[in-house]
Length: 194
Image (cartoon, rainbow, N blue to C red):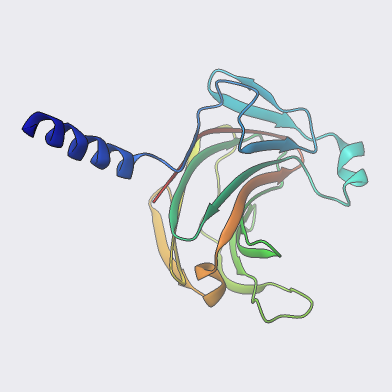
């Protein structure tokens, strides 16, 4: 009986530490993933896509994107991206049922941090920061971590770490996405934990 209780307690601890989502890109199919707006290739534990300029125009200037359907409020999202020299923007977004809630936009100008106030009628974003020193390196893997807890988001990119606050960050989320415009982007090691 003691052995059974110990085993039950151990399995409960393991379940509590299990990721909410893990994508190692070992397969082109994952129930929670929607690879859109381009021809995504899945090989060597990475997802890679090159923007198709005709699709970009057809999708109203929106490039390829990986959506992950996942209900969550507080979570830590970790992933790595490798842009090529032609990639202009990489965008991470946490979305609510009705609208965007929190966004990071990486470009040659740095990292823009945006929130989307729930009370906004036209759903315009507000700038939380423009981190001009945070620039992703082309041709290299760049690790990104976004911890969402209540109304706070702690973002880590390389040696950079900073926490931002806005009420919309604490709202319930239904999915997250990683998208980009122009050039080629590779993504790997996507993990979402509590």
